[in-house]
Image 1 (cartoon, rainbow, N blue to C red):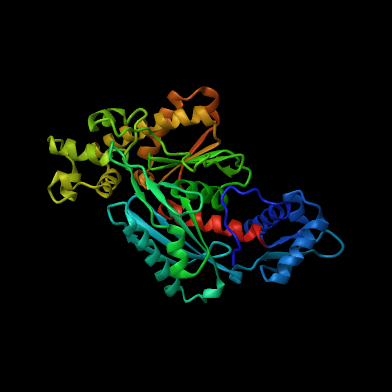
Image 2: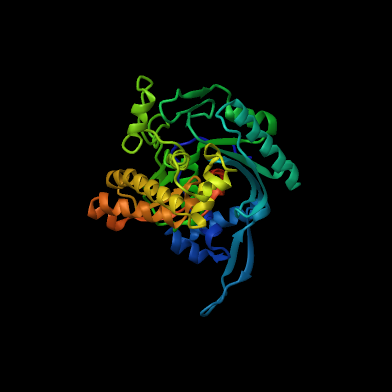
Amino acid sequence: MIKQMLKDRILTDKERKNLSILEVIRKNGPISRTDISKITELNIVTVSNYVNHYIKKGLVIEGELDESTGGRKPVLVELNPKAGYIVGVGLNMLNMVGVLVDLEINVITEVKQERIPENSEMVINKMVDMAAEIIEKSGIEKDKLVGVGVGIPGIIDERGRTIRWPQSLGEKDISVCLSIKDSFEKRLNIPTFVENDANAAVLGEKWLGLDRDVRHMMYMFSGVGVGIIINGEIYRGVSGAAGELGISSFKADKKEILDMTYGLGRWEMDLGMTREAQEKVAAGRGSMMKDLAGGNPKNIGFRHLVQAVKEKDPLAIEIVEQGGYALGKKIAFMVNFLNPEIVVIGGGIEDCGATLLDGIKNAVKEWSVEEAATHVKIIPSAFGENAVALGVVGLVAREVFAQA
């Protein structure tokens, strides 16, 4: 079991070495102790001592002998995926995703459900139910579960006790006093770690997908939040509110907020593209989206927009191109401000495909300073709707490795 899960704590020297060595074994195994030493830049004696300790604990196993250029053949080691299992539950724009993985982050069990269209305590209870369902379906023994990760939008306090959901378009923010962490731990009796969705997604992309040398990156979560990694670590700010993209005031009326959305204002999760599609179709613009919505423009949803883009519907393409370009201007501001190596587009809007991505890239190229625009790479999420669930799984795995 994980003894402690504290965000932003300073790792001890031993924990840093644990994390470095085990991450290399996870990504590169089977691998020799000599190669681990070269990649981590830790001396071979240190690596051997740590690896031998992991073997005794059953976290690492020895495999076949490696090819040798002469002398004794080195023994290869790899992670023991069955040493523990992790549950991750993430909330996305349209659905909830839950996964149970082994320590190599192989998905053993996966469950997906449509999310209820509200932010409330009911959402949290549904996520707990999903975690319990995943555990039951997997058939994994309870003592093999080392932790649960929960990825959820909003501003989370440092202990995962409460959450505040900043609303878009001038609506009142929602505060939920139900303890997310306690809700999971009381029901499941498994250590639980709670993280903001964009933060979870950016770390998941970094730790599970991208090259380990990437140090500065952003994850643009459906236009409303940004996960930020600076010097290899998540940047949360002093109170965990870093990355809430856009400003709002309860004193402003809805029209003022709407007028600000393409500038500094808060945005809808889908960049306002669904609302625009509804308005333009209702005004008489022809589009297959109307047929997909059963003939009623008010029923046009984000999924209809995505399907129409894939079918090369002219209006849908126009809306997504404009939405991508508008988002690209906000990203250009962040690119100038933080100068990242990579910007990942995710949270659901990446389903719009190359049409959206091209609009973003064009705006970033046009609105960013040349030095920043030249060095940034803009890519869609590698994990799509699983990004948040896998991201929190990665956070739990890092804690497991650090405390090995």
